[in-house]
Image (tube, rainbow, N blue to C red; front, top):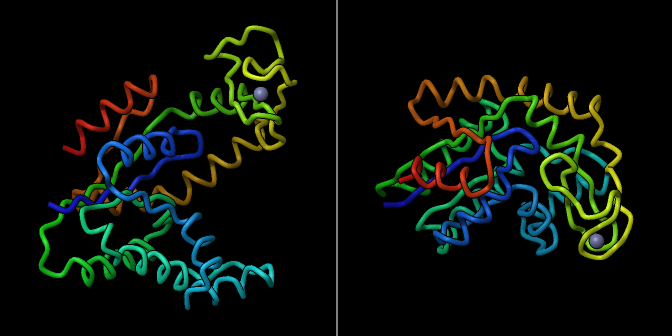
Length: 218
Ligand SMILES: [Zn+2]
């Protein structure tokens, strides 16, 4: 049966890491809205050209154009076994658009759809963010609280000085989370009412979360 997974979760919920792992193990295609948009623009597909026009003017790409780019991708052969959709939908309007496109693409097919919500207390998210440090040279990412490093402020891998991203402060992180929860709360209700929502406890280690994830998508 075709598996259609929609992943939702706040920034730093670990959604990205889990998506990569699951896609690699199951062969489900990771459909990541941000990368798709960049690819479509680079390849110059019809929708990609329209998107590029907006981006070059510094404007927001209209949701209809984003939806068309996602639809083009979901129609391709390699996605017919299933996919993990990430970064879309972000509103009820978008969820309804997705519904319509999937009805068209899946016409008559047997499909299992699940919306996985990575649930994690905001305190844990704040910790992941404000203790995060990264290496400007090799890209390694550390967490001062959960991943002890050998020498304070220095990258274990390459010896460079670690930095904190400008937007990884408590205040900015809090704003990011508030916006996220405000935007997605209605969407969570929407999928819950349809019986599609699965709440995944996203606290714990990467492997623990992954095992729970595999349980719920069985
Ligand atoms: Zn480094």
